[in-house]
Length: 243
Picture (cartoon, helix red, strand yellow):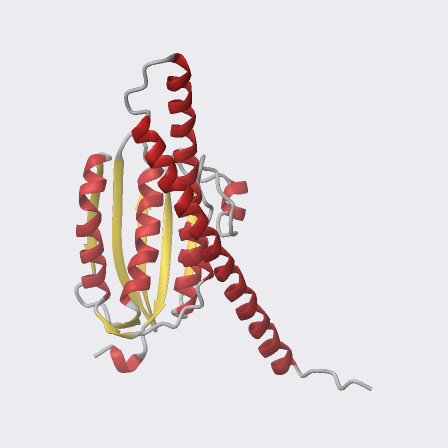
C-alpha cells in the first residue's frame, strides 16, 4: 500500500517537476537556436547575392528571402523571450533605493519615449523606504511595462510614474493615457503566449509578473478603454530596511 504524500511533499514534488520541465524546455529552445542561426546566416548570404537583382525571377527570390529573414528574426525573438520566461530565477536581492533604479531605467528609456511622443512625468517619493531588490531582473520587468505603455499610445501621450509607501509595502504606479484594455484582454494578459499584438510573443507581461512575484510582490491593473491604464506594483519593504 502506497503512503499518501503530505501536502508539503506534494508541493516539493510539483516544484521539482516544474523545474525539470523548465530545464528541458530551455534545452530544447537552445537546440532550436543553433540551426536557426545557420538558417539566418545563409539567408543573409543569399540576400547579399541578390542585392542587385536584375531579372524578375531574381527579384521574386529576393522578396521571398526578405520574408524568410523577417520570420527567422521573429522566431529568434520568440526563443529569447521564452528562455527569459522559463529561466529558473535565482534572485540576488540587496537593499536598494527603488527610486534610483526607476530613474536609471527611465533615463535609459527616455529616447524611445521621446521618439514615440510620450511624455514621462515622475512623482517619486523622496522618503521611500529601501527594498530588497534584484536590480537586473527588476529593470527587465519595468522595461516590459514601459514598452507596453508606449505601445498603448501609438499617437503619443503621457506616462506618469509615481512611487508611494504605505505600511510594509512600497508602491509603483505606471499610469498611461493610452487606448486602454478591454475586459477580455485584462482577464488573459498575464497568461503565457496570450497576445493581441501582431507578431508578439505574449511573454512580456507574464515574465514581469513572474519577476515581481519572485520578489514577494504583487501586480494589479486598472484600465478603461479609451482612457488609459494603470499598472500598480507593490513590493515588500521589511522594517529593518526602512531606516
